[in-house]
Length: 255
Image 1 (cartoon, rainbow, N blue to C red):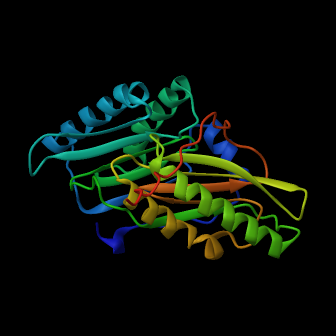
Image 2 (tube, one colour):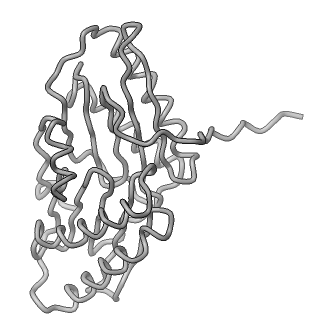
C-alpha cells in the first residue's frame, strides 16, 4: 500500500451514521493502489468473481470469509466481515450492498476498503491476510460529555476490557456497557477481521484506542476504523447484547 494514496475519512457526526446505514451508503471508503486495472481485463474478471464469492459465502460462514482468485499478476485477495451481533439476513444485505457499491466507489482501483454500519469489504492485488492494517479514519458525535474525568476513566476501562476479550472470542468481537458520572450509561464494541491471530488483533485494537483522544476527545460517541479492526462507542445501545462472553485463556499452571 502506498500511504500517499490513502484518502482518510472525514470526521463526521455519528448522527449521520444511522441514515447512511438505512440508505445503504458506506460509513467510509478508501481507494488504494499505485495502478488501476483496465476495463474487461483479467484482473477485473477475477475481482468480480471474488466479490460474488464473498457475497455468497460471508453470511453462511459465520459472518467472515477471506478468499483469493487468479494468479499473478492478476491475482485478487479479498475478505468480507459482518459485525459480530448481526443476524444472517442483515449480514447478507450488508455484504450484498457493499460488494456492489465498492466498485462504484473505487472504479478501476486495484485496492479498496469500504465500511458499512454492520460490515466491511476489502480487496487488493497484494496478499494482506494476517497483516495488521493501520488507522484509516474516524467519526464522532458532536455532543460533549458532562463529566470529562469520569467519562475518560470509564471509557478507558471499557475499551481495555473489550480489547482483551475480543481476540479470544471465536468471532473476534466483544461488546459491553459502562457508567460514568454515577448514572450515565454508554455502550461500546470492538472487532477484528479473522485473518488476524489473537496477538495481532490486540495490537490492532490498541492502535485504534490510542487514536480516541485525537478523534473523539470527550464526545458522547465515536467510531475508529482500519482495514483489520474497528471500535465504536455511543450513549445509546446500537448493537444486540451478547449472550456469551469469551475470556482470555488462563496462564499455564506451575508445577
